[in-house]
Image: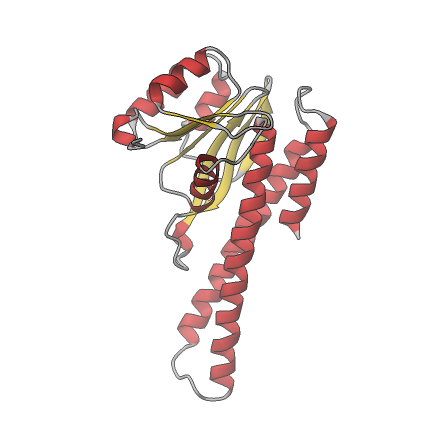
Length: 237
């Protein structure tokens, strides 16, 4: 089964979310039909593709303010409630993240009680991992559960990268102190600046999620809210 964006009208992946069963992977025609029938689902778009942007711009199931946010070029991580949903920008890493501050990625997201729409302009690490897990048979029941999965992966990946970078900093500092390394001050400074950027990236994500968790729409159940709050706490740690 092909998953080429060029054959899928800007849709990178689409899934019907099923309770206690593996999600159903869909290409564009089936995903569009399922969306029309108001199935519980996740649609993830390539926002560089004009067809994806046109579809989002014309989708009247998404509030107008949310459509504007999804299609904006905002680089600020934030979330807000709008009508019956949640919309904003979350942080990720570029798929091929290689210790470059310019490779901190952004994900546009809209969530309501029946679907979650996400979009990106550059391949992202966390989202790709989620896509592959769902295609391998992961069970996800609701859009909030999918958001919780997203936060769990964000926590894991950012923790791994931070530990790796801290270890590199420690090794360089040890080498300088023991006079094994010469001329590494520039690299040490670069890594420290990157760690600061990562910390700000995660801090902004936490603040945005904490803010919106206090203003969740009425369709968010107490059990789902508890799962979300626990995921936010893990991210904070």
